[in-house]
Amino acid sequence: MDVAEETRLRHKRDFIQFLENIYMDEIKALVQNKRHRLIVNVSDIHTHFRESESSSRILKNPIEYMLSFCDAATEATRNIDPKYLKEGEQVLVGFEGHFVSRRVTPRELLSEFIGSLVCVEGIVTKCSLVRPKVVKSVHFCPSTGEFTNREYRDITSHAGLPTGSVYPTRDDNGNLLVTEYGLCKYKDHQTLSIQEVPENAAPGQLPRSVDVIAEDDLVDLCKPGDRVAVVGIYKALPGKSKGSVNGVFRTILIANNISLLNKEANAPIYTQRDLQEIKKIAARDDAFDLLSRSLAPSIYGHAWIKKAVILLMLGGMEKNLKNGTHLRGDINMMMVGDPSVAKSQLLRAIMNIAPLAISTTGRGSSGVGLTAAVTSDQETGERRLEAGAMVLADKGIVCIDEFDKMNDQDRVAIHEVMEQQTVTIAKAGIHASLNARCSVVAAANPIYGTYDRSLTPTKNIGLPDSLLSRFDLLFIVLDQMDAGIDSMISEHVLRMHRYQNDRGEAGPDGNLPYGREDGGESEVFVKYNRMLHGKKKKRGQTNEKTLTIKFLKKYIHYAKHRIQPELTDEVRH
Image (cartoon, rainbow, N blue to C red; front, top):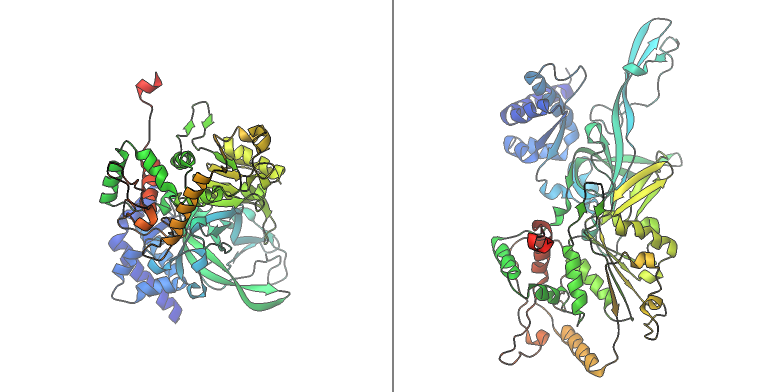
């Protein structure tokens, strides 16, 4: 027995002992539910193998241990139910739990992680079709009457070196072989592409993505637009360029567990005090005015638009009727008006506060970029779906600036999303329907650049009626030539620029939209500052308080996800 075989048997004995101590109930449940993958928590491995150094080595060099772990899980399953697994079948092992420093985004997936176990979080942008991949082929020789077997391994397998993928046509003596397709063994194979989530991507940089290979029971667990956490082994493949192998390697992630993260992945953390303050503010008579004032305190005026934005972020109740009709619950809003009336700034404020918001501009986006595109896979040449901005913003908000600069062909692509809330593709032999349940907030200039008051609003806006009817709220924002209003706006702007908070950032809403949400308690109201809020009012008049951005995020998230309003009998009748 060679050294490698001995080491493998030793690892297998350790793993059998580990499974018998902790995971017998899970294995029984696995047999009962007819599954073939045992999910093991990384924390259990750390606690059980604390004495030896195996716990950190399993994470750093999992390829050495994976085969022994699968053998141990198979043996433990056979001990419980000998008839459960057919001959040659194995129980596969997947991992979950707290990966701490190994929980990364595609941007943080660097060369130090190659060959180790990582957990990558992101959003699925591409999915290939599920194809069978040969594991073992059986060949029959008519002249000698004998069967020959051949096993195939590639870079994704944990056992042994990769073999060639060529089918044998003759045996050693030169006799012809016939492939017995019914006796061959195959496994399902699919490739995914995972991109970093839009709200945590660094501004001004291209989002990074990583290719994932999913096999066996992990195929078809997610579709484009889903947020997932993939646990797997990060591997490098040598890249070929013009016949010679260069030094640059292509990397892939070989998955052993895929778990869906719902949109709550970026949910804020509520403390007990937060929940008490939320209920206290909800009981106030002026709760709606307070929320709208706090939306973007650096923007002067626009009270009605801010109220509309708060309602849009809270959203309505979507209804799916028994006859199959879908009534959307998302509100669409459009602002048309003169230049420099803070339309784009309002869109930035929405980006800052909404849990999931994607920003695009009219000229910088095409119809397929907003909805979905059918692309060709570079390696296999087959067609696959690629999700666009509106599919990625499912259950979120899409902000479109310079809406009037879009081409008519591209604008037509939005019609279906805004009413049916799906993206239907029927191209190149693919027919699919993807969810795009998002609110659209658009900002546009009038047809002549500035608003012409002598013309009707319809002529000023210059958009087709079929599109305008899909916007529930339409605001015409005018730049009023009035010295009194102008002086108040300029005073407000100067106060904003003179003020700096503790971190040296200007303005009351100076926190960055791309920062990750940290836990802990948050202040409810913005502290009074004479430089920022002006002189205190006389007795009898109160200074209007505003909520902090952090607390406003929590309030909106709580109201949208935890409260399900229903019509009372009194209102119905």
